[in-house]
Amino acid sequence: MVRNSPREVIARELDVDPPADLDLRPRWNLCPGEEVLAVVEGRQGRRIGALRWGLVPSFAPDASGGARAINARAETIAVRPAFRDPFRRRRCLVVADAFYEWRREDGRRVPYCFRPAGGGLLTFAGVWDRWRDDSGGSLTTCAIVTCPANALVGAVHDRMPAVLAGADRARWLDVTRQDPDTLQALLVPAPPEALEGFEVAPLVNSPRHDSPECVRPVGGRLLP
Image 1 (cartoon, rainbow, N blue to C red):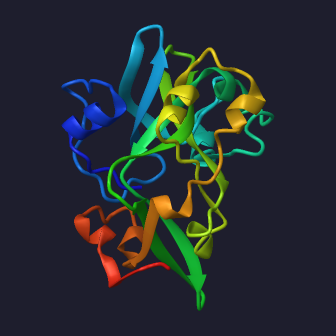
Image 2 (cartoon, rainbow, N blue to C red; image 1 turned 90 degrees about the vertical axis):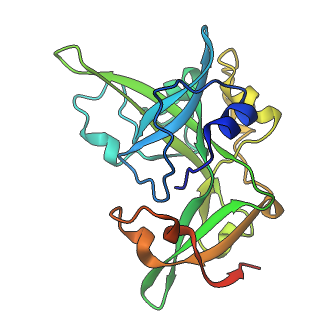
């Protein structure tokens, strides 16, 4: 995942005031297990902060399961034990500027980058939860909701993040909405024309690489 928009762009587009101490340094290769930027809404209004990517349910005996729960499938999120309560009560928007998917080509995993065709932020539907250990410490984590890929992303991978835009962002964050059917209706593929995609270098295959080189197009051409 890529996140490099400056504070003022995030504040303006998402109608939220990032805290002064929130780390908004550009990230070019955010990986599961790291902190992602997320927006939530509740009694205190709309807030933005950092959540660890990889959901640990509140009922989990330990925090080890988060490494496996980085995504929640839109089709089953309402019934899977780890996600069904967060789906109803603890939803968030995960903020990004681009995301990566991989395609198998001649036995290799070739990375591709997808970003808004006209520029701007991406916000992914997400769910979050808070896990507490026996000593009273807590860990707040999230998962990104995925849906079937649109025609563009589908040339690379069969799944993609559920991208929310416009008024759907507020609908997803509204905690008074708890009807599963109403919420799942938001979790559909983004229109193919809303995104552009291109091959990038295999640098992104390793979390050690986190620089603008990760999003440099290979060959300089976009996916059709």
